[in-house]
Image 1: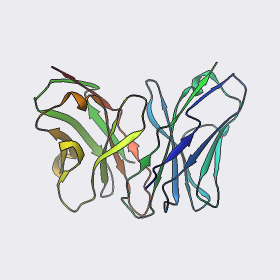
Image 2: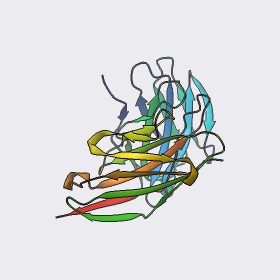
Image 3: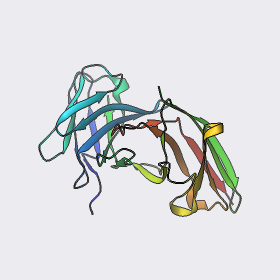
Image 4: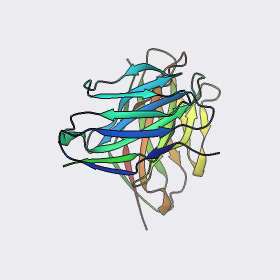
Length: 113
Length: 114
């Protein structure tokens, strides 16, 4: 069974540009979660999508947005990039039952120069 | 609100020694608790999870954790450390009702020396 896949692996952008990160969940999983792992800041929850809808959002500005497609894959968009957006962005998927663990991809390393 | 505190950002043990990584949680509802491991330049891998079926939970790679409600703790242990256990470990809590968003602790970096 294929795990969670993320693309690209690395992304280099300049300040002010937009970045698009992509995630394919495990087959059968309908929920997708995005986390930011910045140096010294730990794992911060960004967004949760389920059945195509945004269910919850972390404490991030509106320039962080995303969507979930009918096939449950997801996209994270970061507009007007700032230097502090440099981080590892992790996507995870889970089944819908309470207590289902999150399964993580290997992340996209975003570097903003 | 739920939260997780991991005591000790860095832990160093000798190969073959006991590994003990500490995690305390705060939750207003019966929690689901997890331990994840992250190797360099990789995502998070699930080690084990507590979902109220048993207080002592066994996971992969010889790790186990015990849920102690009275102490609000979920410490991770392994009897004998291997060099390959060197990584960062994260404790996490989620709520109920299909709300599986995880709140993570700050992580503990485990070093294993010969």
